[in-house]
Length: 594
Image (cartoon, rainbow, N blue to C red; front, side, top):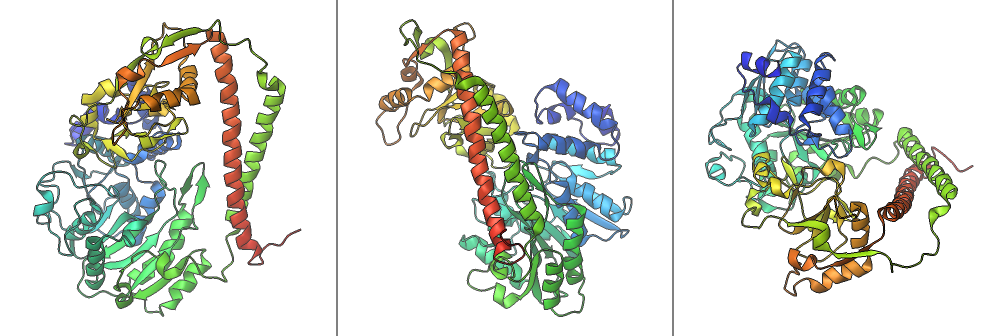
């Protein structure tokens, strides 16, 4: 039915392969999710996206813009009931266009969307059609950076990939860069200029940018910022709370740009709204009340309201955040920073600290106390479960190559740096991603999904063990469920236990973390500028192991101690946050010691 719906509306219908990029990777699971979504009303697909995001390790933010962020971007520049053309040149799952459609009231708007991945076009198409949005979507832009604008729209709303290197090809040479040529290693300022180039005169763009783009030290980026400021293109920058995305803690800002020769305001409005938002599990979520608070300050400024610049700071303080209007000649100084905190000094002393943040920190610490009590009661009940042993005399012994399949990652020539991306695709595991026996939740490198299909041989499955192949040896990492389908890089290798050999993968992982095993691997790494351990050498590592029952009891005890240690670490971190929040209140006088 989904395929038919897409075809009837003239949209390419590669729906099955698109949804397979979601986690979990089982087609049956995804079919169930789509069927469930179909019966949940107008918010169906956003509900699916948010549900996937909420589950640990599901990287749905690869193509999903948080609903609150998209709603804020739309509210900053769109007017309900006003006929408007809107473009998202990097539409991900269609969230920005959906927010625009809701804000202006549906039929009054014409929506355009672009993506560099045709499969995401199918996902976005189905989501938007389910909302009743007949958007004009394409994945066939004539060039990555067309020399002349292919659109003339009133508004651009977009959340482009952050800090992503330019794809190989002629695009950077043929692009139109009126504010300066972006650096080859980063497309942030290419997206800003592409958005401006897509506007009609007087049109506005809201572009999601990493906060560090506002004061990066790269000379080309600094000069582009200065040209944007002096060319009247930048009207406002809003820093939003961190941890809005489920897959990355990168703090972001909204840059409000306008294609105009003579702006309504001489200055630039800087807003620091990092204190807003509500914590939901590991994320912060922008609620409607947060959106309304920010727009109550920003929209009058953009609309050219006649009032003293200092009035915006007062209005912001009344709503729990900070704002200031800065003259363009001051912004366009030596560093030309567009980072709000550089002008706000981290906030205005005298405004009362946010009581909700103190309550949040207090509750978080209390939750950890409850968990610690539960784990300690469980530990006392089992007595920690160990006693003096009889030694390994009766244990089995084998070399590693007889216990598991050893698979090195693909060679660098097969998977070079030019094949990687930083934003979408299948994660690649490098040595730096192995931390304390685990693989980090978010890797720094990915490969496009099309490329990943050619490297199935190097996929990871739950309970695989990943070791360093090239580089300094460190503790091997165990693959968890959410990391299924990730790929080995050239610098690591995979161990997959053979089911018939009588050794538990978790036991082998613990064994390889022993000082003896790690020293054995380090000593056998080739003594070159970059130490390298071959799969053949690693295959000769001797491994001792008891019966399966004893292995499982040992792993269970180590796992219980590990969980307790993790909670203590989290508790210490929560106490640190509570101390910082309490200091804000104690030294302001809004609370006092008992």
